[in-house]
Length: 457
Image (tube, rainbow, N blue to C red; front, side, top):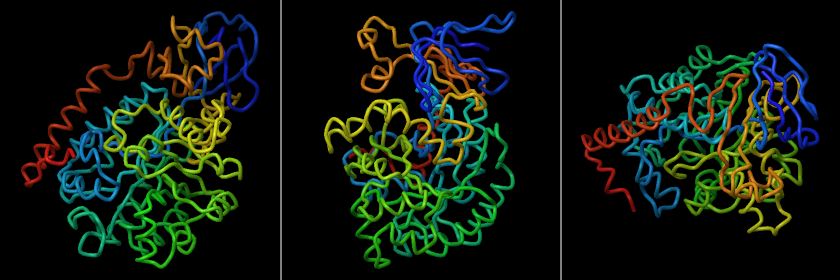
Protein backbone atom coordinates (compact mmCIF):
# COMPACT_ATOMS: atom_id res chain seq x y z
CA UNK A 1 0.00 0.00 0.00
CA UNK A 2 1.11 3.59 -0.65
CA UNK A 3 -0.25 6.70 1.06
CA UNK A 4 0.65 9.65 -1.17
CA UNK A 5 0.29 13.45 -1.35
CA UNK A 6 0.13 13.67 2.43
CA UNK A 7 1.65 15.91 5.12
CA UNK A 8 3.71 13.51 7.25
CA UNK A 9 4.41 14.16 10.93
CA UNK A 10 6.67 11.20 11.74
CA UNK A 11 7.36 12.34 15.35
CA UNK A 12 10.93 11.07 14.95
CA UNK A 13 12.54 13.10 12.19
CA UNK A 14 11.54 16.14 10.12
CA UNK A 15 8.01 16.69 8.87
CA UNK A 16 7.26 16.37 5.19
CA UNK A 17 4.85 18.93 3.78
CA UNK A 18 4.00 16.65 0.88
CA UNK A 19 5.28 13.10 0.81
CA UNK A 20 4.38 9.45 0.83
CA UNK A 21 4.49 6.37 3.03
CA UNK A 22 5.08 2.99 1.43
CA UNK A 23 3.89 -0.06 3.36
CA UNK A 24 5.11 -3.60 2.81
CA UNK A 25 3.10 -6.22 4.67
CA UNK A 26 2.54 -4.97 8.22
CA UNK A 27 5.54 -2.60 8.26
CA UNK A 28 6.58 0.77 6.95
CA UNK A 29 9.04 0.35 4.09
CA UNK A 30 9.69 3.98 3.16
CA UNK A 31 8.80 7.53 4.21
CA UNK A 32 9.90 10.19 1.78
CA UNK A 33 9.15 13.63 0.36
CA UNK A 34 7.73 14.27 -3.07
CA UNK A 35 5.58 12.15 -5.36
CA UNK A 36 5.34 8.42 -4.76
CA UNK A 37 7.09 6.07 -7.20
CA UNK A 38 5.19 4.03 -9.73
CA UNK A 39 4.15 0.67 -8.32
CA UNK A 40 1.75 -1.17 -10.63
CA UNK A 41 -0.90 -3.17 -8.80
CA UNK A 42 -0.17 -1.66 -5.38
CA UNK A 43 -3.20 -0.04 -3.66
CA UNK A 44 -2.83 3.71 -3.23
CA UNK A 45 -4.51 6.10 -0.82
CA UNK A 46 -4.65 9.74 -1.88
CA UNK A 47 -3.76 11.71 1.25
CA UNK A 48 -4.41 15.13 -0.26
CA UNK A 49 -5.62 17.42 2.53
CA UNK A 50 -4.62 14.91 5.22
CA UNK A 51 -2.06 14.70 8.01
CA UNK A 52 -0.39 11.35 8.63
CA UNK A 53 0.76 10.60 12.17
CA UNK A 54 1.70 7.44 14.00
CA UNK A 55 -1.32 5.67 15.44
CA UNK A 56 -2.02 6.97 18.93
CA UNK A 57 -1.08 4.84 21.96
CA UNK A 58 -3.31 4.80 25.04
CA UNK A 59 -1.39 3.82 28.18
CA UNK A 60 -4.09 3.80 30.86
CA UNK A 61 -7.71 2.73 30.68
CA UNK A 62 -10.47 0.77 32.46
CA UNK A 63 -12.68 -0.49 29.67
CA UNK A 64 -15.31 -2.03 31.94
CA UNK A 65 -16.18 1.48 33.14
CA UNK A 66 -17.91 2.26 29.83
CA UNK A 67 -20.95 0.61 31.50
CA UNK A 68 -20.95 3.04 34.46
CA UNK A 69 -20.51 6.49 32.93
CA UNK A 70 -22.17 9.56 34.39
CA UNK A 71 -22.17 8.42 38.03
CA UNK A 72 -20.71 10.20 41.06
CA UNK A 73 -20.42 13.31 38.94
CA UNK A 74 -19.27 15.67 41.70
CA UNK A 75 -17.06 13.34 43.75
CA UNK A 76 -13.40 13.20 44.68
CA UNK A 77 -11.51 10.04 43.73
CA UNK A 78 -12.08 8.26 47.03
CA UNK A 79 -15.77 9.29 47.12
CA UNK A 80 -16.16 8.16 43.52
CA UNK A 81 -14.58 4.77 44.25
CA UNK A 82 -16.74 4.15 47.30
CA UNK A 83 -19.86 5.04 45.30
CA UNK A 84 -19.01 2.81 42.34
CA UNK A 85 -17.29 -0.28 43.77
CA UNK A 86 -20.62 -1.81 44.81
CA UNK A 87 -21.98 -1.26 41.30
CA UNK A 88 -18.85 -2.75 39.68
CA UNK A 89 -19.08 -5.76 41.99
CA UNK A 90 -22.10 -6.85 39.94
CA UNK A 91 -20.31 -6.98 36.58
CA UNK A 92 -19.89 -10.21 34.67
CA UNK A 93 -18.10 -11.29 31.50
CA UNK A 94 -21.03 -10.21 29.33
CA UNK A 95 -20.88 -6.69 30.75
CA UNK A 96 -17.12 -6.53 30.25
CA UNK A 97 -17.21 -7.72 26.65
CA UNK A 98 -19.92 -5.21 25.70
CA UNK A 99 -18.24 -2.33 27.52
CA UNK A 100 -14.84 -3.22 26.03
CA UNK A 101 -16.28 -3.44 22.51
CA UNK A 102 -17.74 0.04 22.81
CA UNK A 103 -14.68 1.50 24.53
CA UNK A 104 -12.19 0.01 22.08
CA UNK A 105 -14.21 1.13 19.07
CA UNK A 106 -14.36 4.65 20.52
CA UNK A 107 -10.58 4.62 20.85
CA UNK A 108 -10.18 3.46 17.25
CA UNK A 109 -12.47 6.27 16.11
CA UNK A 110 -10.11 8.77 17.78
CA UNK A 111 -6.97 7.52 16.02
CA UNK A 112 -5.81 4.97 18.60
CA UNK A 113 -4.08 1.85 17.30
CA UNK A 114 -2.62 0.43 20.55
CA UNK A 115 -4.20 0.50 23.99
CA UNK A 116 -3.51 -0.86 27.42
CA UNK A 117 -6.29 -1.69 29.86
CA UNK A 118 -6.02 -1.96 33.63
CA UNK A 119 -8.67 -4.41 34.82
CA UNK A 120 -8.51 -5.02 38.55
CA UNK A 121 -12.09 -5.85 39.66
CA UNK A 122 -12.73 -9.61 39.60
CA UNK A 123 -15.99 -10.50 41.36
CA UNK A 124 -16.18 -14.20 42.11
CA UNK A 125 -18.22 -16.45 39.85
CA UNK A 126 -18.75 -13.89 37.09
CA UNK A 127 -16.95 -15.60 34.22
CA UNK A 128 -13.58 -14.92 32.62
CA UNK A 129 -13.47 -11.14 32.54
CA UNK A 130 -9.96 -10.89 31.10
CA UNK A 131 -10.81 -13.24 28.23
CA UNK A 132 -13.93 -11.18 27.51
CA UNK A 133 -12.02 -7.98 26.90
CA UNK A 134 -9.30 -9.76 24.93
CA UNK A 135 -11.97 -11.12 22.60
CA UNK A 136 -13.38 -7.60 22.18
CA UNK A 137 -9.95 -6.26 21.24
CA UNK A 138 -9.54 -8.99 18.63
CA UNK A 139 -12.89 -8.09 17.10
CA UNK A 140 -12.17 -4.35 16.95
CA UNK A 141 -8.63 -4.92 15.67
CA UNK A 142 -6.46 -2.85 18.02
CA UNK A 143 -3.14 -3.90 19.52
CA UNK A 144 -3.99 -4.72 23.10
CA UNK A 145 -1.97 -4.61 26.32
CA UNK A 146 -4.25 -5.86 29.10
CA UNK A 147 -2.74 -5.24 32.52
CA UNK A 148 -3.98 -8.00 34.84
CA UNK A 149 -4.92 -5.98 37.88
CA UNK A 150 -5.63 -7.10 41.41
CA UNK A 151 -6.66 -6.02 44.91
CA UNK A 152 -6.23 -7.85 48.20
CA UNK A 153 -7.11 -5.07 50.67
CA UNK A 154 -10.88 -4.94 51.05
CA UNK A 155 -12.82 -2.88 53.54
CA UNK A 156 -12.16 -5.34 56.34
CA UNK A 157 -8.41 -4.65 55.91
CA UNK A 158 -8.63 -0.87 55.64
CA UNK A 159 -9.08 -0.69 51.87
CA UNK A 160 -11.86 0.96 49.86
CA UNK A 161 -13.35 -1.93 47.81
CA UNK A 162 -15.91 -4.38 49.22
CA UNK A 163 -14.36 -7.66 50.27
CA UNK A 164 -16.24 -9.60 47.57
CA UNK A 165 -14.19 -8.04 44.75
CA UNK A 166 -10.75 -8.57 46.28
CA UNK A 167 -8.73 -11.77 45.93
CA UNK A 168 -6.30 -13.71 48.07
CA UNK A 169 -2.59 -13.19 47.36
CA UNK A 170 -1.87 -16.73 46.17
CA UNK A 171 -4.93 -16.72 43.92
CA UNK A 172 -3.88 -13.41 42.38
CA UNK A 173 -0.35 -14.57 41.64
CA UNK A 174 -1.60 -17.83 40.16
CA UNK A 175 -4.22 -16.15 37.96
CA UNK A 176 -1.78 -13.50 36.82
CA UNK A 177 0.88 -16.03 35.88
CA UNK A 178 -1.75 -18.03 33.98
CA UNK A 179 -2.82 -14.90 32.09
CA UNK A 180 0.75 -14.17 31.02
CA UNK A 181 1.33 -17.76 29.96
CA UNK A 182 -1.93 -17.93 28.03
CA UNK A 183 -1.91 -14.59 26.24
CA UNK A 184 1.41 -12.73 26.26
CA UNK A 185 3.03 -12.56 22.82
CA UNK A 186 6.47 -10.88 22.87
CA UNK A 187 6.94 -10.97 19.09
CA UNK A 188 7.71 -7.79 17.12
CA UNK A 189 4.28 -7.63 15.46
CA UNK A 190 2.39 -8.72 18.58
CA UNK A 191 -1.26 -7.80 18.87
CA UNK A 192 -1.46 -8.91 22.51
CA UNK A 193 0.86 -8.40 25.46
CA UNK A 194 0.09 -8.74 29.15
CA UNK A 195 1.34 -6.63 32.07
CA UNK A 196 1.17 -7.22 35.82
CA UNK A 197 -0.81 -4.51 37.58
CA UNK A 198 -1.86 -4.44 41.24
CA UNK A 199 -4.41 -1.67 41.50
CA UNK A 200 -2.88 0.91 43.85
CA UNK A 201 -1.01 1.33 47.13
CA UNK A 202 -4.30 1.78 48.98
CA UNK A 203 -5.97 -1.40 47.64
CA UNK A 204 -2.98 -3.76 47.38
CA UNK A 205 -0.86 -5.02 50.26
CA UNK A 206 2.89 -4.61 50.36
CA UNK A 207 3.20 -8.36 49.85
CA UNK A 208 1.06 -8.20 46.72
CA UNK A 209 3.10 -5.31 45.33
CA UNK A 210 6.46 -6.97 45.94
CA UNK A 211 5.40 -10.45 44.80
CA UNK A 212 3.84 -8.97 41.65
CA UNK A 213 7.09 -7.25 40.80
CA UNK A 214 8.98 -10.52 41.26
CA UNK A 215 6.47 -12.35 39.07
CA UNK A 216 6.57 -9.74 36.29
CA UNK A 217 10.35 -9.80 36.15
CA UNK A 218 10.46 -13.58 36.14
CA UNK A 219 8.02 -13.57 33.20
CA UNK A 220 9.70 -10.69 31.39
CA UNK A 221 6.59 -8.49 31.30
CA UNK A 222 5.89 -4.94 32.40
CA UNK A 223 4.54 -3.51 35.67
CA UNK A 224 1.76 -0.96 36.07
CA UNK A 225 -0.22 0.63 38.91
CA UNK A 226 -1.95 3.86 39.93
CA UNK A 227 0.28 6.27 41.83
CA UNK A 228 0.22 9.79 43.29
CA UNK A 229 -3.17 10.59 41.78
CA UNK A 230 -4.59 12.64 44.66
CA UNK A 231 -3.57 14.31 47.89
CA UNK A 232 -5.90 11.87 49.70
CA UNK A 233 -3.69 9.05 48.43
CA UNK A 234 -0.57 10.81 49.70
CA UNK A 235 -2.15 11.26 53.12
CA UNK A 236 -3.20 7.60 53.13
CA UNK A 237 0.35 6.46 52.30
CA UNK A 238 1.82 8.62 55.04
CA UNK A 239 -0.66 7.25 57.60
CA UNK A 240 -0.43 3.60 56.54
CA UNK A 241 3.24 3.29 55.56
CA UNK A 242 4.98 6.38 56.91
CA UNK A 243 6.11 7.25 53.37
CA UNK A 244 5.03 9.35 50.41
CA UNK A 245 3.83 7.33 47.37
CA UNK A 246 7.06 7.37 45.32
CA UNK A 247 9.15 6.63 48.43
CA UNK A 248 6.89 3.66 49.11
CA UNK A 249 7.25 2.38 45.55
CA UNK A 250 11.02 2.75 45.82
CA UNK A 251 11.03 0.65 48.98
CA UNK A 252 8.98 -2.06 47.24
CA UNK A 253 11.27 -2.25 44.20
CA UNK A 254 8.77 -0.63 41.86
CA UNK A 255 10.97 1.84 39.98
CA UNK A 256 12.65 0.89 36.72
CA UNK A 257 12.42 0.93 32.92
CA UNK A 258 9.83 -1.89 33.02
CA UNK A 259 7.38 0.19 35.10
CA UNK A 260 4.86 2.87 34.24
CA UNK A 261 2.53 4.60 36.68
CA UNK A 262 -0.93 6.00 35.99
CA UNK A 263 -1.46 9.70 36.81
CA UNK A 264 1.65 10.73 38.80
CA UNK A 265 0.00 14.06 39.59
CA UNK A 266 1.49 14.87 42.98
CA UNK A 267 5.25 14.48 42.56
CA UNK A 268 8.03 16.33 44.34
CA UNK A 269 11.17 17.51 42.55
CA UNK A 270 12.98 14.51 43.98
CA UNK A 271 10.24 12.17 42.76
CA UNK A 272 10.58 13.48 39.20
CA UNK A 273 14.35 13.04 39.37
CA UNK A 274 14.00 9.43 40.47
CA UNK A 275 11.52 8.60 37.71
CA UNK A 276 13.87 10.10 35.15
CA UNK A 277 16.98 8.41 36.54
CA UNK A 278 15.35 4.97 36.68
CA UNK A 279 13.51 5.16 33.34
CA UNK A 280 10.13 4.81 35.06
CA UNK A 281 7.28 6.06 32.87
CA UNK A 282 3.91 7.61 33.60
CA UNK A 283 0.53 7.89 31.91
CA UNK A 284 -0.91 11.41 32.00
CA UNK A 285 -4.74 11.43 32.09
CA UNK A 286 -5.70 15.13 32.03
CA UNK A 287 -9.46 14.81 31.54
CA UNK A 288 -9.92 12.29 34.34
CA UNK A 289 -7.66 14.28 36.67
CA UNK A 290 -9.74 17.38 35.93
CA UNK A 291 -13.07 15.58 36.28
CA UNK A 292 -12.15 14.26 39.73
CA UNK A 293 -10.42 17.48 40.82
CA UNK A 294 -7.19 15.56 41.36
CA UNK A 295 -4.84 18.27 40.06
CA UNK A 296 -2.51 18.87 37.13
CA UNK A 297 0.50 16.61 36.64
CA UNK A 298 3.87 18.32 36.24
CA UNK A 299 4.29 17.02 32.71
CA UNK A 300 6.37 19.90 31.37
CA UNK A 301 8.88 19.55 34.19
CA UNK A 302 8.96 15.78 33.81
CA UNK A 303 9.77 16.07 30.12
CA UNK A 304 12.39 18.74 30.74
CA UNK A 305 14.16 16.47 33.22
CA UNK A 306 14.06 13.43 30.95
CA UNK A 307 11.20 11.41 32.43
CA UNK A 308 8.99 9.59 29.94
CA UNK A 309 5.31 10.51 29.77
CA UNK A 310 2.53 8.98 27.68
CA UNK A 311 -1.18 9.71 27.55
CA UNK A 312 -4.21 7.81 28.83
CA UNK A 313 -7.92 8.48 28.69
CA UNK A 314 -8.48 6.57 31.96
CA UNK A 315 -11.76 4.76 32.53
CA UNK A 316 -14.83 6.29 30.95
CA UNK A 317 -16.55 6.50 34.32
CA UNK A 318 -14.14 9.33 35.18
CA UNK A 319 -13.71 10.78 31.67
CA UNK A 320 -16.99 10.25 29.91
CA UNK A 321 -16.71 9.70 26.13
CA UNK A 322 -13.17 11.11 26.11
CA UNK A 323 -11.37 10.55 22.78
CA UNK A 324 -7.67 9.80 23.03
CA UNK A 325 -6.89 12.42 20.39
CA UNK A 326 -8.63 15.01 22.55
CA UNK A 327 -6.24 14.29 25.41
CA UNK A 328 -3.45 15.90 23.38
CA UNK A 329 -5.37 19.18 23.53
CA UNK A 330 -6.20 18.74 27.20
CA UNK A 331 -2.58 18.02 28.06
CA UNK A 332 -1.39 21.08 26.15
CA UNK A 333 -3.96 23.42 27.70
CA UNK A 334 -3.49 22.12 31.25
CA UNK A 335 0.28 22.60 31.08
CA UNK A 336 -0.08 26.08 29.64
CA UNK A 337 -2.66 27.01 32.25
CA UNK A 338 -0.19 26.01 34.95
CA UNK A 339 3.17 27.06 33.46
CA UNK A 340 2.55 29.50 30.61
CA UNK A 341 2.20 29.36 26.81
CA UNK A 342 5.59 27.75 26.17
CA UNK A 343 5.03 24.88 28.58
CA UNK A 344 4.04 22.32 25.95
CA UNK A 345 4.00 22.57 22.16
CA UNK A 346 1.62 20.88 19.74
CA UNK A 347 4.38 18.55 18.58
CA UNK A 348 5.33 17.62 22.13
CA UNK A 349 1.66 16.78 22.79
CA UNK A 350 1.65 14.57 19.69
CA UNK A 351 4.79 12.82 20.94
CA UNK A 352 3.13 12.14 24.30
CA UNK A 353 0.28 10.42 22.45
CA UNK A 354 2.55 8.33 20.22
CA UNK A 355 6.21 7.69 21.03
CA UNK A 356 5.77 8.51 24.71
CA UNK A 357 3.04 5.91 24.93
CA UNK A 358 5.10 3.36 22.99
CA UNK A 359 7.96 3.83 25.46
CA UNK A 360 5.60 3.24 28.40
CA UNK A 361 4.63 -0.10 26.87
CA UNK A 362 8.20 -1.02 25.95
CA UNK A 363 7.45 -0.85 22.22
CA UNK A 364 9.40 2.20 21.10
CA UNK A 365 11.32 0.07 18.56
CA UNK A 366 8.05 -1.06 16.94
CA UNK A 367 5.54 1.76 17.41
CA UNK A 368 5.15 5.47 18.02
CA UNK A 369 6.84 7.02 14.97
CA UNK A 370 6.65 6.74 11.20
CA UNK A 371 10.00 5.20 10.28
CA UNK A 372 11.07 2.39 7.93
CA UNK A 373 11.01 -0.93 9.73
CA UNK A 374 8.37 0.05 12.25
CA UNK A 375 4.85 -1.35 12.23
CA UNK A 376 2.39 0.31 9.85
CA UNK A 377 0.13 1.72 12.56
CA UNK A 378 -0.96 5.02 11.01
CA UNK A 379 -3.67 7.62 11.55
CA UNK A 380 -4.69 9.78 8.60
CA UNK A 381 -6.45 12.95 9.74
CA UNK A 382 -8.64 15.06 7.45
CA UNK A 383 -7.43 18.64 8.09
CA UNK A 384 -8.78 20.26 4.91
CA UNK A 385 -12.41 20.73 5.91
CA UNK A 386 -14.06 24.08 5.20
CA UNK A 387 -13.27 25.29 8.72
CA UNK A 388 -10.12 23.32 9.65
CA UNK A 389 -8.37 24.49 6.46
CA UNK A 390 -8.16 27.96 7.99
CA UNK A 391 -5.35 26.60 10.23
CA UNK A 392 -2.28 26.38 7.95
CA UNK A 393 -0.26 24.15 10.30
CA UNK A 394 -1.90 20.69 10.25
CA UNK A 395 -0.32 19.57 13.55
CA UNK A 396 -1.72 22.70 15.18
CA UNK A 397 -5.12 21.88 13.67
CA UNK A 398 -4.93 18.37 15.14
CA UNK A 399 -3.82 19.35 18.65
CA UNK A 400 -5.19 22.84 19.29
CA UNK A 401 -8.64 22.32 17.81
CA UNK A 402 -11.42 19.75 17.99
CA UNK A 403 -10.50 16.25 16.85
CA UNK A 404 -10.48 16.24 13.03
CA UNK A 405 -12.28 13.54 11.02
CA UNK A 406 -10.31 10.38 10.31
CA UNK A 407 -9.78 9.38 6.72
CA UNK A 408 -8.08 6.11 7.68
CA UNK A 409 -6.67 4.21 10.66
CA UNK A 410 -4.31 1.35 9.86
CA UNK A 411 -3.07 -1.28 12.31
CA UNK A 412 -0.24 -3.24 10.77
CA UNK A 413 -1.40 -2.03 7.38
CA UNK A 414 -4.95 -3.32 7.96
CA UNK A 415 -7.80 -0.81 7.77
CA UNK A 416 -9.68 -0.49 11.06
CA UNK A 417 -11.35 2.89 10.38
CA UNK A 418 -12.12 4.45 7.00
CA UNK A 419 -13.92 7.73 6.41
CA UNK A 420 -14.79 8.03 10.08
CA UNK A 421 -16.41 4.58 10.39
CA UNK A 422 -15.27 1.26 11.81
CA UNK A 423 -14.53 -1.34 9.16
CA UNK A 424 -13.84 -4.31 11.45
CA UNK A 425 -17.26 -4.32 13.13
CA UNK A 426 -20.64 -2.93 12.20
CA UNK A 427 -20.19 0.73 13.11
CA UNK A 428 -23.40 1.16 15.14
CA UNK A 429 -23.31 -2.30 16.70
CA UNK A 430 -20.18 -1.48 18.69
CA UNK A 431 -21.99 1.42 20.34
CA UNK A 432 -25.10 -0.64 20.99
CA UNK A 433 -22.93 -3.26 22.73
CA UNK A 434 -21.95 -0.58 25.23
CA UNK A 435 -25.58 0.41 25.84
CA UNK A 436 -26.52 -3.22 26.49
CA UNK A 437 -23.58 -3.52 28.90
CA UNK A 438 -24.74 -0.44 30.82
CA UNK A 439 -28.29 -1.76 31.11
CA UNK A 440 -27.13 -5.18 32.19
CA UNK A 441 -24.77 -3.79 34.84
CA UNK A 442 -27.54 -1.55 36.22
CA UNK A 443 -29.91 -4.51 36.45
CA UNK A 444 -27.33 -6.77 38.09
CA UNK A 445 -26.45 -4.04 40.60
CA UNK A 446 -30.12 -3.46 41.45
CA UNK A 447 -30.52 -7.19 42.09
CA UNK A 448 -27.81 -6.79 44.72
CA UNK A 449 -29.50 -3.76 46.25
CA UNK A 450 -27.48 -0.98 44.62
CA UNK A 451 -29.26 1.40 42.28
CA UNK A 452 -26.86 3.12 39.92
CA UNK A 453 -29.22 6.08 39.43
CA UNK A 454 -28.78 6.95 43.12
CA UNK A 455 -25.04 7.41 42.56
CA UNK A 456 -25.23 10.28 40.06
CA UNK A 457 -24.17 13.08 42.46
